[in-house]
Image 1 (cartoon, one colour):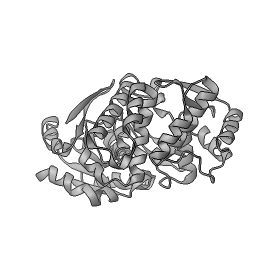
Image 2: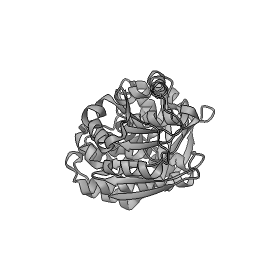
Image 3: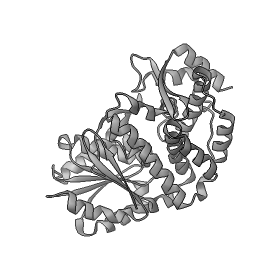
Image 4: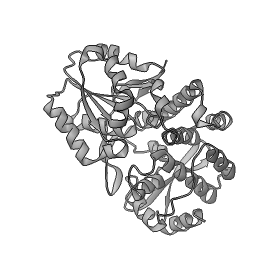
Length: 358
């Protein structure tokens, strides 16, 4: 079991990573909350089928209330958010209650935003069940989607703790493994060249990755996230570098329909595009062909879907929450481990998108 301490302006908390981490939750609740009234688990139908009984058993006699959302990005709609708030009210949660977000990134975002807005904020704990959530569960960004943009309605709201039980990852389908591991690769590219070199050398098959290597990679990813979150909690500066690959990725997700294209696989396409832009515009000397060969072996696609037109993607990118006055800001790399934020004109973006598709 490993613990990574996250320290921000508003809160310090631990990320507990390892096999059997669920067993740490009940002792934490007992020691951390003086007058705990009620516990509400927010999960989704997929996680509930596979793992809910394990969490309920780990909580023993605490009798949690359970709210079950649809799977994936369908959990992050206004309707589901409203239903979760209604469930909290109907079950008489109060300011001494706690929400447990038990699932992947979508459930973590939903549960965190419910906690942030219910009675102006009650405590919550992240319990990730996916590789992708090693990123989203840390740092306190919680949100729901709007048809016009991903994560456009949300808050910065830190959890009390994160419990990351690696035993829960064994049921993930291949697409979800790829989705999550794209964020691991992102963390290495924006911060740690040595970690990136380790990944290329040691990760050749995502379906048979030994648990020791997976724990090492996820712990490194959490530590990279910590470096940015601790210095820039509200994303006014360097935390924006964590969006490497995400501007185009969010546009692809929106254009394809949330839930029809996994977040991490869209991020991989976005990273390949950002790496090409970095080579073209900043003089980055990165062997993109070797990178593409490696990620293809891991099962990723690296081309923009044909049905997502360049013009439509451009409009979606202008609506991204990182855009200012419709100017598009892209995270690029001067070199591996040295990210920069660069404004790119619509004309250049269309040209580069069309060139990338050829």
